[in-house]
Length: 340
Image (tube, rainbow, N blue to C red; front, side, top):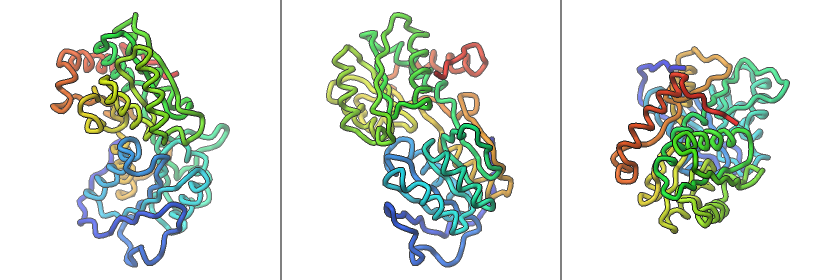
Protein backbone atom coordinates (compact mmCIF):
# COMPACT_ATOMS: atom_id res chain seq x y z
CA UNK A 1 0.00 0.00 0.00
CA UNK A 2 2.31 2.77 -1.19
CA UNK A 3 1.55 6.45 -0.95
CA UNK A 4 1.91 8.89 -3.84
CA UNK A 5 4.56 11.47 -2.92
CA UNK A 6 3.60 14.81 -4.42
CA UNK A 7 5.64 17.99 -4.67
CA UNK A 8 3.83 20.58 -2.60
CA UNK A 9 4.36 23.87 -0.93
CA UNK A 10 5.57 24.25 2.60
CA UNK A 11 2.93 23.64 5.23
CA UNK A 12 1.44 26.99 6.20
CA UNK A 13 -1.05 25.84 8.78
CA UNK A 14 -0.48 25.56 12.50
CA UNK A 15 -1.26 22.39 14.46
CA UNK A 16 -4.40 22.89 16.57
CA UNK A 17 -4.31 20.76 19.68
CA UNK A 18 -7.80 20.61 21.13
CA UNK A 19 -8.26 20.37 24.89
CA UNK A 20 -10.08 17.34 26.31
CA UNK A 21 -13.81 17.44 25.75
CA UNK A 22 -13.77 20.92 24.20
CA UNK A 23 -15.07 21.80 20.75
CA UNK A 24 -12.75 23.20 18.13
CA UNK A 25 -12.90 26.92 18.74
CA UNK A 26 -13.39 28.79 15.44
CA UNK A 27 -10.97 31.52 16.47
CA UNK A 28 -8.21 28.90 16.81
CA UNK A 29 -8.61 27.70 13.23
CA UNK A 30 -7.20 29.70 10.32
CA UNK A 31 -9.81 31.18 8.02
CA UNK A 32 -7.98 30.17 4.85
CA UNK A 33 -8.18 26.41 4.29
CA UNK A 34 -5.14 24.45 3.21
CA UNK A 35 -5.67 22.26 0.17
CA UNK A 36 -6.15 19.19 2.39
CA UNK A 37 -7.02 19.15 6.08
CA UNK A 38 -6.36 16.05 8.19
CA UNK A 39 -7.89 15.52 11.62
CA UNK A 40 -6.63 12.91 14.08
CA UNK A 41 -8.14 11.72 17.35
CA UNK A 42 -5.66 10.09 19.72
CA UNK A 43 -6.12 6.82 21.58
CA UNK A 44 -6.00 6.14 25.33
CA UNK A 45 -2.73 7.43 26.74
CA UNK A 46 -2.79 10.43 24.42
CA UNK A 47 -0.04 12.21 22.58
CA UNK A 48 3.42 11.86 24.08
CA UNK A 49 2.82 8.27 25.20
CA UNK A 50 6.18 7.53 23.52
CA UNK A 51 4.63 4.47 21.95
CA UNK A 52 1.49 3.91 19.85
CA UNK A 53 0.05 7.43 19.72
CA UNK A 54 3.45 8.96 19.12
CA UNK A 55 3.92 6.67 16.13
CA UNK A 56 0.70 8.05 14.60
CA UNK A 57 1.83 11.60 15.34
CA UNK A 58 5.16 10.97 13.61
CA UNK A 59 3.20 9.87 10.54
CA UNK A 60 1.32 13.16 10.51
CA UNK A 61 4.49 15.17 11.01
CA UNK A 62 6.04 13.27 8.09
CA UNK A 63 2.98 13.97 5.94
CA UNK A 64 3.15 17.68 6.83
CA UNK A 65 6.71 17.79 5.51
CA UNK A 66 5.70 16.13 2.25
CA UNK A 67 2.26 17.53 1.47
CA UNK A 68 0.26 20.74 1.56
CA UNK A 69 -1.89 19.82 4.56
CA UNK A 70 -3.24 21.33 7.73
CA UNK A 71 -3.42 19.10 10.81
CA UNK A 72 -5.98 19.22 13.61
CA UNK A 73 -5.78 16.87 16.61
CA UNK A 74 -8.08 16.00 19.49
CA UNK A 75 -7.13 14.15 22.65
CA UNK A 76 -10.33 12.77 24.24
CA UNK A 77 -10.41 11.96 27.93
CA UNK A 78 -12.44 8.76 27.77
CA UNK A 79 -14.59 6.56 25.56
CA UNK A 80 -17.58 8.87 25.78
CA UNK A 81 -15.66 11.56 23.88
CA UNK A 82 -14.57 9.53 20.86
CA UNK A 83 -17.67 9.71 18.70
CA UNK A 84 -18.07 13.40 19.48
CA UNK A 85 -14.47 14.09 18.52
CA UNK A 86 -14.80 12.29 15.18
CA UNK A 87 -18.10 14.04 14.49
CA UNK A 88 -16.60 17.40 15.36
CA UNK A 89 -13.88 17.03 12.76
CA UNK A 90 -16.20 15.60 10.09
CA UNK A 91 -18.69 18.47 10.52
CA UNK A 92 -15.89 20.92 9.79
CA UNK A 93 -15.48 19.20 6.41
CA UNK A 94 -12.04 17.87 7.27
CA UNK A 95 -10.83 15.88 4.25
CA UNK A 96 -9.49 12.91 6.26
CA UNK A 97 -10.40 11.93 9.81
CA UNK A 98 -8.16 9.36 11.54
CA UNK A 99 -9.04 7.47 14.72
CA UNK A 100 -6.03 5.93 16.48
CA UNK A 101 -6.89 2.62 18.14
CA UNK A 102 -9.28 -0.31 17.75
CA UNK A 103 -11.69 1.31 20.21
CA UNK A 104 -12.70 3.76 17.46
CA UNK A 105 -13.89 1.02 15.08
CA UNK A 106 -17.66 1.20 15.62
CA UNK A 107 -17.63 5.00 15.88
CA UNK A 108 -15.67 5.28 12.64
CA UNK A 109 -18.19 3.06 10.86
CA UNK A 110 -21.04 5.22 12.12
CA UNK A 111 -19.39 8.54 11.22
CA UNK A 112 -18.32 7.28 7.78
CA UNK A 113 -21.96 6.48 6.99
CA UNK A 114 -23.14 9.87 8.27
CA UNK A 115 -20.47 11.80 6.35
CA UNK A 116 -19.99 9.96 3.03
CA UNK A 117 -18.02 12.83 1.50
CA UNK A 118 -15.32 12.64 4.18
CA UNK A 119 -12.53 10.05 4.12
CA UNK A 120 -12.00 8.14 7.37
CA UNK A 121 -9.17 5.87 8.51
CA UNK A 122 -8.85 3.72 11.61
CA UNK A 123 -5.51 2.55 12.97
CA UNK A 124 -5.97 -1.01 14.30
CA UNK A 125 -9.50 -0.98 12.88
CA UNK A 126 -11.56 -4.07 13.73
CA UNK A 127 -14.80 -4.48 11.72
CA UNK A 128 -17.98 -4.69 13.74
CA UNK A 129 -19.42 -8.18 13.48
CA UNK A 130 -22.04 -8.38 10.75
CA UNK A 131 -21.46 -4.81 9.58
CA UNK A 132 -20.63 -3.79 6.02
CA UNK A 133 -17.55 -1.59 5.93
CA UNK A 134 -18.38 1.87 4.50
CA UNK A 135 -16.60 2.62 1.20
CA UNK A 136 -15.07 5.83 2.60
CA UNK A 137 -13.39 4.05 5.54
CA UNK A 138 -9.86 2.61 5.38
CA UNK A 139 -8.87 0.08 8.04
CA UNK A 140 -5.14 0.21 8.82
CA UNK A 141 -4.00 -3.05 10.41
CA UNK A 142 -0.75 -4.83 11.22
CA UNK A 143 0.54 -8.36 11.67
CA UNK A 144 1.87 -7.60 15.12
CA UNK A 145 2.42 -11.28 15.83
CA UNK A 146 5.16 -11.39 13.18
CA UNK A 147 7.22 -8.61 14.76
CA UNK A 148 6.53 -10.03 18.20
CA UNK A 149 7.83 -13.42 17.05
CA UNK A 150 11.17 -11.85 16.17
CA UNK A 151 11.59 -9.99 19.49
CA UNK A 152 10.47 -13.17 21.25
CA UNK A 153 13.30 -15.00 19.53
CA UNK A 154 15.66 -12.24 20.67
CA UNK A 155 14.43 -12.71 24.24
CA UNK A 156 14.87 -16.48 23.97
CA UNK A 157 18.42 -16.09 22.69
CA UNK A 158 19.33 -13.50 25.32
CA UNK A 159 17.73 -14.75 28.54
CA UNK A 160 20.02 -16.25 31.13
CA UNK A 161 17.33 -17.43 33.55
CA UNK A 162 15.29 -19.09 30.76
CA UNK A 163 12.25 -17.26 32.17
CA UNK A 164 10.84 -14.29 30.27
CA UNK A 165 7.67 -12.25 30.66
CA UNK A 166 4.94 -10.45 28.74
CA UNK A 167 2.74 -7.62 30.03
CA UNK A 168 -0.28 -6.65 27.93
CA UNK A 169 -2.61 -3.71 28.31
CA UNK A 170 -6.28 -4.47 27.70
CA UNK A 171 -6.99 -8.19 27.39
CA UNK A 172 -8.39 -8.34 23.85
CA UNK A 173 -7.60 -10.38 20.71
CA UNK A 174 -5.44 -7.57 19.30
CA UNK A 175 -3.04 -7.63 22.25
CA UNK A 176 -3.22 -11.40 22.39
CA UNK A 177 -1.58 -11.32 18.93
CA UNK A 178 1.49 -9.72 20.49
CA UNK A 179 1.65 -12.33 23.25
CA UNK A 180 1.09 -15.30 20.92
CA UNK A 181 3.78 -14.24 18.49
CA UNK A 182 6.22 -13.42 21.29
CA UNK A 183 5.75 -16.76 23.04
CA UNK A 184 6.16 -18.61 19.72
CA UNK A 185 9.41 -16.75 19.04
CA UNK A 186 10.80 -17.50 22.49
CA UNK A 187 10.03 -21.21 22.18
CA UNK A 188 11.31 -21.41 18.60
CA UNK A 189 14.85 -20.73 19.82
CA UNK A 190 14.51 -21.89 23.44
CA UNK A 191 12.02 -24.77 23.79
CA UNK A 192 12.73 -25.06 27.52
CA UNK A 193 12.12 -21.39 28.27
CA UNK A 194 9.12 -20.38 30.39
CA UNK A 195 6.96 -17.43 29.27
CA UNK A 196 5.01 -15.59 31.98
CA UNK A 197 2.01 -13.47 30.98
CA UNK A 198 -0.13 -10.79 32.60
CA UNK A 199 -2.64 -8.12 31.53
CA UNK A 200 -3.43 -4.76 33.07
CA UNK A 201 -7.21 -5.12 32.71
CA UNK A 202 -10.24 -5.46 30.47
CA UNK A 203 -11.06 -1.77 29.98
CA UNK A 204 -9.31 0.86 27.83
CA UNK A 205 -7.70 2.42 30.91
CA UNK A 206 -5.47 -0.66 31.01
CA UNK A 207 -3.33 1.13 28.43
CA UNK A 208 -2.71 4.11 30.72
CA UNK A 209 -1.69 2.73 34.12
CA UNK A 210 2.12 2.84 34.59
CA UNK A 211 1.78 2.04 38.30
CA UNK A 212 0.03 -1.24 37.57
CA UNK A 213 2.51 -1.94 34.79
CA UNK A 214 5.36 -1.67 37.26
CA UNK A 215 3.59 -3.96 39.71
CA UNK A 216 2.93 -6.62 37.08
CA UNK A 217 6.50 -6.50 35.82
CA UNK A 218 7.96 -6.60 39.30
CA UNK A 219 5.91 -9.73 40.06
CA UNK A 220 7.33 -11.41 36.94
CA UNK A 221 10.88 -10.42 37.84
CA UNK A 222 10.26 -11.91 41.29
CA UNK A 223 9.32 -15.18 39.56
CA UNK A 224 12.65 -15.34 37.78
CA UNK A 225 12.06 -13.42 34.54
CA UNK A 226 15.04 -11.43 33.33
CA UNK A 227 13.40 -9.97 30.18
CA UNK A 228 9.84 -8.62 29.82
CA UNK A 229 8.13 -7.55 26.59
CA UNK A 230 5.19 -5.19 26.94
CA UNK A 231 2.33 -4.28 24.62
CA UNK A 232 0.51 -1.90 26.89
CA UNK A 233 0.86 1.70 25.74
CA UNK A 234 1.60 4.12 28.55
CA UNK A 235 1.27 1.28 31.06
CA UNK A 236 4.54 0.04 29.59
CA UNK A 237 6.38 2.97 31.18
CA UNK A 238 5.91 1.09 34.44
CA UNK A 239 7.29 -2.12 32.91
CA UNK A 240 10.39 -0.29 31.73
CA UNK A 241 10.66 1.42 35.12
CA UNK A 242 10.58 -1.95 36.87
CA UNK A 243 13.35 -3.24 34.62
CA UNK A 244 15.44 -0.19 35.48
CA UNK A 245 14.80 -0.62 39.20
CA UNK A 246 15.68 -4.32 39.18
CA UNK A 247 18.60 -4.19 36.77
CA UNK A 248 16.74 -6.40 34.28
CA UNK A 249 15.76 -5.99 30.63
CA UNK A 250 12.60 -4.79 28.89
CA UNK A 251 11.48 -4.92 25.26
CA UNK A 252 9.60 -1.85 24.08
CA UNK A 253 6.73 -1.68 21.62
CA UNK A 254 5.37 0.37 18.70
CA UNK A 255 8.14 3.00 18.88
CA UNK A 256 11.84 2.74 19.72
CA UNK A 257 11.74 3.01 23.51
CA UNK A 258 15.47 2.72 24.13
CA UNK A 259 15.78 6.24 25.48
CA UNK A 260 13.19 5.51 28.17
CA UNK A 261 15.90 3.48 29.91
CA UNK A 262 19.19 3.15 28.00
CA UNK A 263 20.39 0.72 30.66
CA UNK A 264 17.64 -1.73 30.16
CA UNK A 265 15.68 -1.62 26.87
CA UNK A 266 17.07 -4.57 24.92
CA UNK A 267 15.14 -3.75 21.72
CA UNK A 268 11.67 -2.63 20.68
CA UNK A 269 9.08 -4.19 18.38
CA UNK A 270 8.44 -1.41 15.89
CA UNK A 271 4.91 -1.05 14.55
CA UNK A 272 5.03 1.37 11.65
CA UNK A 273 1.86 3.30 12.35
CA UNK A 274 3.72 6.30 10.93
CA UNK A 275 4.06 4.55 7.56
CA UNK A 276 0.35 3.66 7.46
CA UNK A 277 -0.75 7.19 8.44
CA UNK A 278 1.60 8.85 5.96
CA UNK A 279 0.40 6.56 3.18
CA UNK A 280 -3.30 7.18 3.71
CA UNK A 281 -2.73 10.95 3.87
CA UNK A 282 -0.83 10.70 0.60
CA UNK A 283 -3.77 8.90 -1.01
CA UNK A 284 -6.16 11.66 0.00
CA UNK A 285 -3.78 14.34 -1.28
CA UNK A 286 -3.38 12.49 -4.59
CA UNK A 287 -7.12 11.86 -4.92
CA UNK A 288 -6.58 8.08 -4.99
CA UNK A 289 -8.06 7.25 -1.58
CA UNK A 290 -10.19 4.12 -1.42
CA UNK A 291 -11.76 2.45 1.57
CA UNK A 292 -11.06 -1.10 2.62
CA UNK A 293 -8.66 -3.06 4.79
CA UNK A 294 -4.88 -2.69 4.46
CA UNK A 295 -2.48 -4.84 6.48
CA UNK A 296 1.25 -4.43 7.06
CA UNK A 297 3.64 -7.08 8.34
CA UNK A 298 7.32 -7.96 8.08
CA UNK A 299 7.16 -8.20 4.28
CA UNK A 300 5.84 -4.63 3.98
CA UNK A 301 8.21 -3.22 6.64
CA UNK A 302 5.12 -2.58 8.75
CA UNK A 303 6.62 -4.28 11.80
CA UNK A 304 10.20 -4.99 12.82
CA UNK A 305 12.72 -4.60 15.60
CA UNK A 306 15.36 -2.09 16.66
CA UNK A 307 19.04 -2.90 16.18
CA UNK A 308 21.25 0.18 16.00
CA UNK A 309 24.29 1.72 17.72
CA UNK A 310 22.14 2.79 20.68
CA UNK A 311 21.31 -0.73 21.83
CA UNK A 312 24.35 -2.54 20.39
CA UNK A 313 25.82 -2.88 23.88
CA UNK A 314 22.78 -4.86 25.01
CA UNK A 315 21.96 -6.71 21.78
CA UNK A 316 24.79 -8.96 20.50
CA UNK A 317 25.54 -8.92 16.78
CA UNK A 318 25.05 -12.68 16.42
CA UNK A 319 21.57 -12.37 17.94
CA UNK A 320 20.71 -9.62 15.46
CA UNK A 321 21.93 -11.76 12.57
CA UNK A 322 19.82 -14.73 13.60
CA UNK A 323 16.78 -12.53 14.29
CA UNK A 324 16.98 -11.10 10.78
CA UNK A 325 17.26 -14.59 9.33
CA UNK A 326 14.15 -15.66 11.26
CA UNK A 327 12.29 -12.59 9.98
CA UNK A 328 13.25 -13.59 6.43
CA UNK A 329 11.92 -17.10 7.09
CA UNK A 330 8.59 -15.63 8.20
CA UNK A 331 8.37 -13.47 5.09
CA UNK A 332 9.20 -16.46 2.89
CA UNK A 333 6.55 -18.58 4.57
CA UNK A 334 9.02 -21.05 6.04
CA UNK A 335 7.82 -20.13 9.53
CA UNK A 336 4.13 -19.74 10.30
CA UNK A 337 3.54 -17.44 13.28
CA UNK A 338 0.39 -17.97 15.38
CA UNK A 339 -1.80 -14.93 15.98
CA UNK A 340 -3.81 -16.31 18.93
